[in-house]
Image (cartoon, helix red, strand yellow):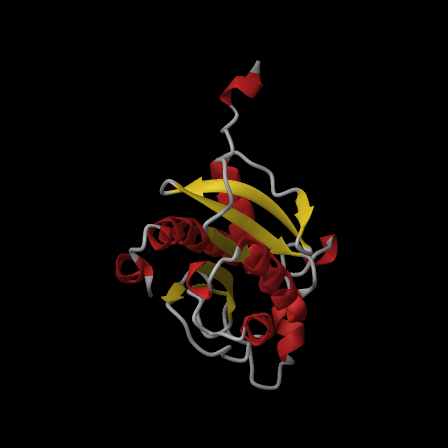
Length: 201
């Protein structure tokens, strides 16, 4: 009778998109570029749902945060084309950029740190670049999860972001992802200032 305890999906269309960025496929699972996917899986876990519905070039799940229905998304387009998935979902549900929260990896932050921003440039991140280009807006809030900087300047960026986390780094990232879950809930409530003050590091 375990189905009795399954969380009921909220009704009606979603008010927010919550997008965790990454690359699909087993070989990318625990790589640095997939910090956003790891966040999305953790949030789904906390909600008692599976991110398994295929739509908008993504796998998705309906969740409720702070009384608001949200669509949790993991784009399956590969990182550099993330905007295709976000644009499709945003257009279908008529969701403005201000209600699209994107969670992704950032090499300028150490593992375990996170930074919340209301809007901004792509900062050299190809997934964010694609979203800005296809939404024609940079006014979407985002949560950056630290993955650590390259070990030395000559290290190829692509090789670094596609490298696997070490065990201690994964543990630090999980802590950051936990904080991101709490931050995103505040952001959905419209309390981005509190989210920034509580969790920016």
